[in-house]
Length: 208
Length: 208
DNA sequence: CTATTTGTTGGTGGATCACTCAAGAAAGGA
DNA sequence: TCCTTTCTTGAGTGATCCACCAACAAATAG
Image (cartoon, rainbow over all chains, first blue to last red; front, side, top):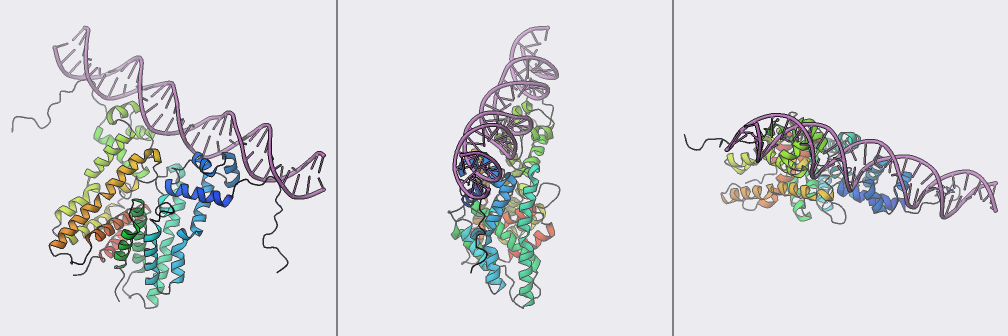
């Protein structure tokens, strides 16, 4: 393994950054997560990150850019990616959705991070002038639907799901339940309570 | 029917109000409903109501008071009260919850008013300084849970619900589904789609 | 009529908002 | 060593926010 080095030796010029960019992104994520986009001010961000506004704007651009980067980072984190992982790893569609609901019931109320799903929490209450952010998050949330539907359709073709089942309707149902779990977690529901909710929700799975 | 008159003839002194208070409240409701509490400014309210800030403060007090009155008014409106009506009018618990879900699926995406439920929409993205409003709305949402549970427990004692069913868990499940329906309506789901979601959700009702 | 009560008008104060800029500081390259 | 590049700092931009007056207008009561 010679040749091109792993880190392409950027040979950075200029004054190095005094704060950890990834660490700052994590702190910003936590703030946006619990307060939403509009509810988080630049002042609160600079205070939490321990830097001045100039440094923040130099490192992340404006508020919208920072928020989009936060959402991307969230999507790559375990909390934000557990659905995709379950859909990939579980051999059956039922197994995948059961795992998604059960994991959501435990992850969403986990006190080690703000309650619920970031893309659901930070979405609402955006004024028309920030409709760009609202549309961005709505697209992200609605993006789950075709993914769910495709998995269910595949299960139907494989004979796992009865022929009279409606993959699109099932996908919409699970999306609604997941958003409901997130909301309930924000309202203080416990993992135990949400797990019971998840089990009940799974009872809607079409019988063979 | 003599005696005390229906309107107690207030014999109002002073300059009469030039705008309709109930009408103004309706307009304010619509604004808060689609923009949330923080996202609605006094300026937007005065512009929509066609009055000046002084009149608004004289008639409703400060922003918080106006918002609370809006929520109370919403709770008395058909859109805000349909759950209570269904619980009262339907003879069976299943009939009540089926009606609640089916009506929510049609009411929430109705284009004649902002999408979703006001208490769910206007709740998020409140900064800590307005935690009073957030707590007020959360209490309102969580208030549905004991009501649901009581109705289910009564059904269980009446033999409508199997003895091994869990009224508390079922109540939490329906609350989560309802919040999910509201969210999906805000994301653009149609009444037809939400109705299919509601039907699937009803499949979780415990078999006898 | 006068006095009283109440709504309306136009404006202000203090705070906060997202954001910017000039100057200083810390690194590498020559 | 000096230059270039990049980041940090601290002050400050105009705009907007909510909250709240004081003065004026319009009604009733006596």
